[in-house]
Image 1 (cartoon, rainbow, N blue to C red):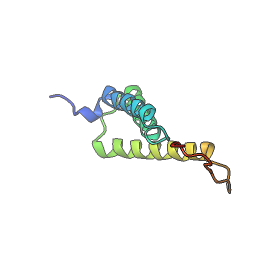
Image 2: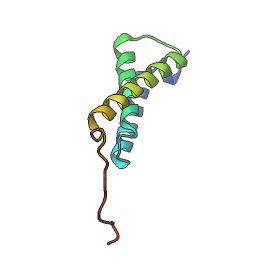
Image 3: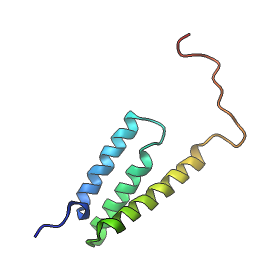
Length: 92
């Protein structure tokens, strides 16, 4: 009997690659947290060889994605109190 696709490491690696490509196409740190989370799950499955269910894998993915997003927000956000202002319109 074959194992479910979500327990195979390369499926998570492919998802990480697709999410990283989407991040390049849609900038703004939207997909990079998800890409890091998927890559971490892929490495976890590759190194441990465990066959976990879908729920634990999604939990690991969600927690690592959230942590990555919080770290990126902390380091790449505008300094506190600073507001981004635009003086020129792209159509001018």
